Image (cartoon, rainbow over all chains, first blue to last red; front, side, top):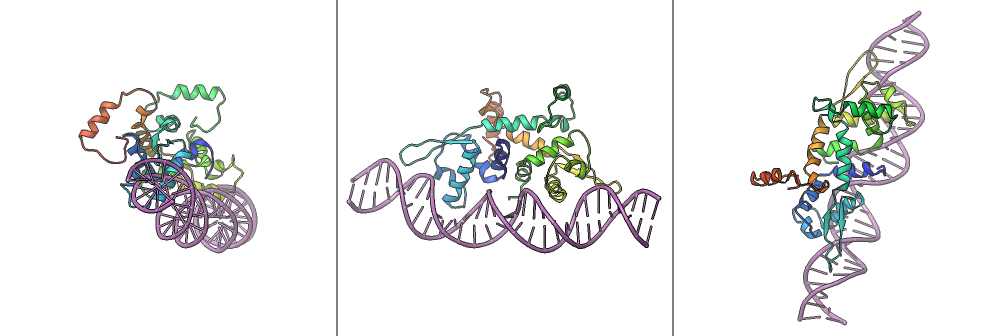
Amino acid sequence: MTDDALSVTFAALADPTRRAILARLAHGEASVTELAAPFTMSLPAVSKHLKVLERAGLITRGRSAQWRPCRLDAGPLADVADWVGRYQQFWDGSFDRLDDHLRQIQEGRTDDRPT
Amino acid sequence: MTDDALSVTFAALADPTRRAILARLAHGEASVTELAAPFTMSLPAVSKHLKVLERAGLITRGRSAQWRPCRLDAGPLADVADWVGRYQQFWDGSFDRLDDHLRQIQEGRTDDRPT
DNA sequence: GCTATGGTAAACCTCGTAGTTAATTAACCG
DNA sequence: CGGTTAATTAACTACGAGGTTTACCATAGC
């Protein structure tokens, strides 16, 4: 797997278990065993998923006695929304962003974006 | 890799080469060799990336003589935007979507979404 | 100190991904 | 037909992802 931030984030999201964990954390902090409860897989497997999410910056982990509570950090999701938003013109039938697009061409932007 | 649509889409996007290919296709149709030009990797490698994108529904491929032109299909990106949008309240500091969120709870929605 | 609980680490297995080179198919052109 | 260009298939290598079980560390509570 490539190691740029966006790739790490997308890869972390490419698993329904991890997305379900994020969905659970949207309700609020939770311990590892709480997060693992809905799944049939072993605790170490969940622990690994959490490590992936942590590496992607999607969760942060605290320390309270023997518990390691997880909290959602949606920062990287904003980057995802930003990235995907550049393609919005290609699915919503509107071209509201076309002038942004053209302006960016003029600015000589040639990196990883649709325009 | 899991085979639900969203996972396949996220996995396809978790590679800078593939994102660059999508960015290129946002300019318009292109052949495989055209798409491969910016990269140092071999043509079969690019061909495999295209197969991943095709499987995710992010591109469609035509046929014109010996060329197999690729076109962007942003449909799956709309699903990504939809998914990530449910977390917007967690990064933009506003709670504009909170009532949507609460309404969905009342509708008994318990699937892969932050609320 | 002992034991129970919460969580991670280690070692291992299996499978898919990303890349290579070489061979093959497909279509055009003279 | 023969040759060239476009692209895929095949066979192979290397590696990381996701899962398991077992063993270990850390803290709480008696």
